[in-house]
Image (cartoon, rainbow, N blue to C red; front, side):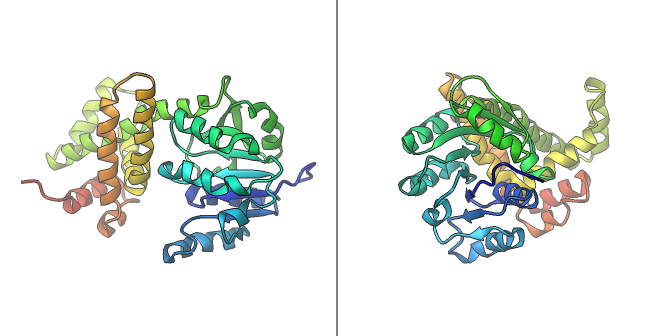
Length: 300
């Protein structure tokens, strides 16, 4: 593919999202990509560094090393670490790069990050609004902020798929945080409903009954998908829902349902680390639910 630009890109945070986007960009012809993750120096960072090597991404020695001479910095860390990540690179930024903040945090956190970085970057509020696999760097994005229009042509050239959200920084984040109330909340309700049905030995009967109210939905498929997602990513989803709770409070709304979703997502994320649960994640809801029941702490 011919390009007018060959931007130098760095990733701060190299978990699932960073790895997926970086590997897609590399396969799309972007050669100069560096990555830094705070886990790199630890034993737990070996897997992340292995993913970088496999993708052809340079493993940086520090946050400063990663962003040196970057044209685009992509921040892809855990929700709780987004401000810390910005602080780690702020003294080392040069030449006014684009700073693509794809972290799942509240609008207020995005605005605080933009303020922290000041005039050193062209800050862009970005929300990832679909699973990062299989599309990787082509996963749909929402883009907002004063530099949204400016970064658009560059994102186009990188074959990234996006829609610009009118308004200032935080508008893309607000859409993601508010929609997560429904998406992650529905996951939690799905688990709770079908886990109860399984324990009552009424799994098929409850599934059939749901069709009476929602005839167009395939509840077996929904349960398979939602329970697996929670088992695989519940802890990360819980952190995101804490940001949704902050978002609702910023809007003057008490996040009653969201706070319960946080608890259920975090609980399932912990159970999902159990090998007996992990072994069932490709086996469908019945097997998963039995394994979850067996692994769950007994209530007295």
